Length: 597
Image 1: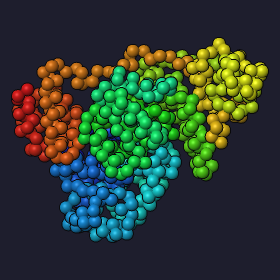
Image 2: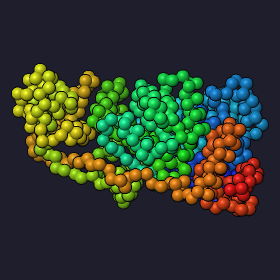
Image 3: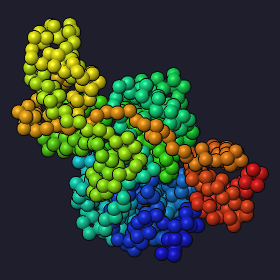
Image 4: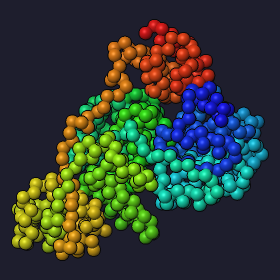
């Protein structure tokens, strides 16, 4: 594919294709349909951007988020590609101008929201122009079983019906087998080729720890491993987002908040701050993040348990998009398990949806409680059977011990039964440990047979026992939201001594889990000076252009400039990320910095 490779080198500034990119591009450019599953940061955008430049007409890119469209278009403008957006962020007059230019063939790519695309006006408009291809980004949104269902995505089958000869590419970074089948069915991609890249992100270190005090644990993690780094912190509720962001600011961390309860203007201001400035920590609900292209996010932290592995994978995948070392860190406790199970029970969804949600939650809990490599467990969920320990997750770095907890579990289950299945873990632990609290005396639970039979285990150990047996489905929560635990059918075999139970023994992480040295930490004084000069120039240039710094150049390009220190223009042209347009725009500035350093 000499022409595609030429575009990759000359326009995008990359020397070679990665993984299956070349094969996808050839198939799509030749007029074939395809479904592409590729991890975040794997180069999905090039799979349709290059065919858009190879084929006649305008490529229509369907995207669910305004921020994603605007960032993509800004990056394309920097390298000289004719692109535009058509969404609710434009005034009526601006939208008319875009439509006129579209009809005149002035765009290679047009990014459009699904709501706009599905209007009769827009469908009639593109029926009058040559369409190069349709790209449906974030295709998992079509699945009702997915973690980010968007009803309007279901209607995108109209593209195949009205434009049967125009090739289509659906792309996603997160889809299990059921979701893939639904994407194919709903978008009419039955004859499409399916390209599945590895879901592995080897640069991300996965770490899940016991929740004690989530805020102080988060602060310790940031201070120890990510001082001055950009990161994202996910919380389940809007209130927790606001409180956590405020608390981090009071502790000296540059943090901002993002959730759907804020005004659109404030959300936009905080998002722009996160994208354009360095060392910002974004505290958010899952309303934030899809389509965020910021490559230098060094960590993603979860203060609450995600609902599914798909959600967890997509959210953690926002770390380390540049391929540099990054952390996926989470605190997880009994309350998380109870809360998620209660949310499923209390939802008004049909039984089938509740069953799917329960299955997905159980897979997430299995990932949290696994005693084997977390990466292997994560990959197996997406159909990759790689059992080789990764050596870069907490269970590989510090393998957890497993103990036969059958007797302790029997004690816990018996205590739930003896107290009438009306109490939460805190009270049950008081009974088991023989704590003569006011509540224990009020309910006369100091007189039952399970009072004090677990005094040999500390409270923290008992909380770990309850967390794990709820995760295992031996206990569940009441449907009235009071947090009471009660027995399930599965607990019967354990109580009768017909089934043994092995649980994880929590241990402290060894020092080997400390932050790995990144490229900057390995620089000598002269190299660090050049690195800082390049970053200052990039920040100034980005501000002048009104775009995030990474749109000018990624950190990986700056690292390569420091490493190679090109002396001539020909050498500069060989640096990854410097295509013809960027060389013409910035070559002189870069050579001046390189020669003076």
